[in-house]
Image 1 (cartoon, rainbow, N blue to C red):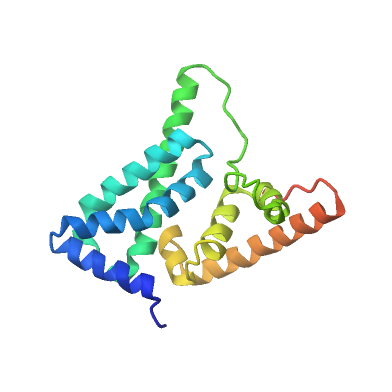
Image 2 (image 1 turned 90 degrees about the vertical axis):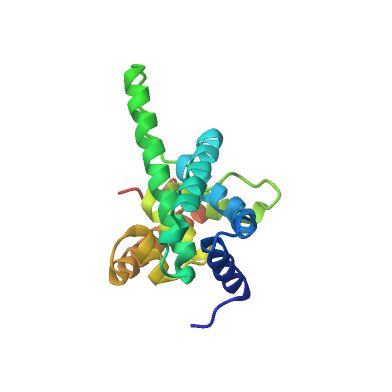
Length: 191
């Protein structure tokens, strides 16, 4: 599989960062900051939480970059770290809410922050919002962030065949939700 110029640049930056070049790490952070923050927002549905998760992710990346054996795996590695940090943040928030005796919020996080500038995306965003969190994350990482099946297997810590199966199911659910949205029906595809 040929490497895209951006991926090659990331790989070089990782190698330089592993060699102790702090500027390379800073450039890598600037290149990835927005993408990771947006994905953290998709997972937490909370602006402050997303910033906290993204910051914790960068701390983990900075501390662990020397343990990354394959610079080409940076993208999947970064998303897998972010996924764990978001799960930790969500778990901590639930515990904090229980301690405060507040009822837990059972709403699924939104697929992404709304973008009123692009009304063509609204049906897709509404359909994505009806999916369960894992389906939504899988679809978003594959089709928005363009992760390969192998990278998704790393992020979700499952075999590639499982990713393919889950992706197939998630796409079917998304299609059903889009069809329901077009017909104007309220269709819930949560598990």
